[in-house]
Length: 381
Image (tube, rainbow, N blue to C red; front, side, top):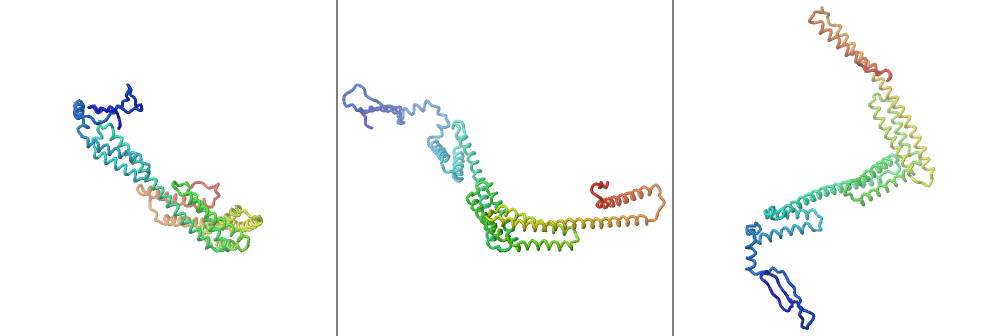
């Protein structure tokens, strides 16, 4: 530092006569005063003698204070880092815990609340680490879900490519699977941290397969032979219906009818959505579909009639069994030798007879109600 002179005072003040741009003699001399740490030992001893020598910070020593301040400064630097990762916050949490363990005196009042600030910072870091764990769990679940759906879509695409092109029932079944898979893929968008680009790709692949199946079905269902499997299944159901003797078997046939009905409904929906230059194609398909639906409705009506007949026969058999049971109970009751009633036997025998007849009457009433119209039925009680 260039100057015309300087003075260093015992308290560390530094007086400097600055150089002037004017080389001529002048009565005004610019000065600058600096506050420096270079005080004399005598001045330092005098100042410390006047201060509180019993302060805990004074007793800790300069080395301990410097190490503590260095550790606190490291915490500040870690807290202000721009790296937002779980490892960074775990390092911050570790540094905070190490500082509090090594410098326990930071929790006292003379440390001006440094320990409480570090503790609050640790609580915030803990919450952030917990959120990181939740986010990682959601990301893992989203990745697994989309991977699972991708495998299912790949399997379905392979089935569509290998499916026979001349079997309408098989193509309709695959079309139903594709539509169901489209809904499952669309549901992935509701999950957090899902890869939207992969979802879009899966939807595009499914839409391609759906369009391909629609084109194949539009060409295949123009021919009468495409509906032959449906008619054969309906004929098989009619033949099986003639030999059915239990209502439980009727339910199995009813399920087959509902399956055929859903397939025909799918044909109607898809044909309506298909855009074609020749509207007569869709009209022809709908006409033949209506014909098969009419046959299916006829079989469904026969199933209901058969079911009602079987229920009536089963109710008659149950009624006959109830009467037979009542007759057997009556025969057993009246075949017993009659004894003269007295005070000890009359009431128990009368009470047993009343219970038997009341039970038989309930069984008979329950059986008779099955043959009565619904408006005439009443409680057996």
